Length: 178
Image: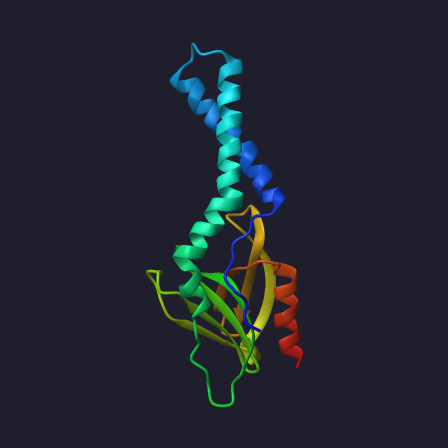
């Protein structure tokens, strides 16, 4: 099942971005112009955040679709003989400090991550289902609940960022018992 590339922010993510932005932008305005009234600073911060929210909800996803859409939609993994892709999802894989964007492919034999062409670190990462020792939830930047950590029997750790984390964990676990 091929999934088309898209970026969507939940209202919870937008709300927290708005609050953080209002406070940060208001503080910057206050530090730059301490004589300005608190009403004016608050009003400017709210207007700026409203515009930022429109950008985050509508313009940013459109821009990213134009920039990355074809690069993401056209990722094709290198498969083994008799290997078939059963499902694919957009994801990122942390390779040292870089969050490498690409896709996870669930095949009948293994989990494959393949990067898109705009990354510094490109390539394909293969994890045989038989080598998986543990799958657990993790937080990105110790805040966002969108991470998965896959640990192999050799002790290698693969940290992914995905949407619908609980669903993706269950898909991997289902593959381990097949």
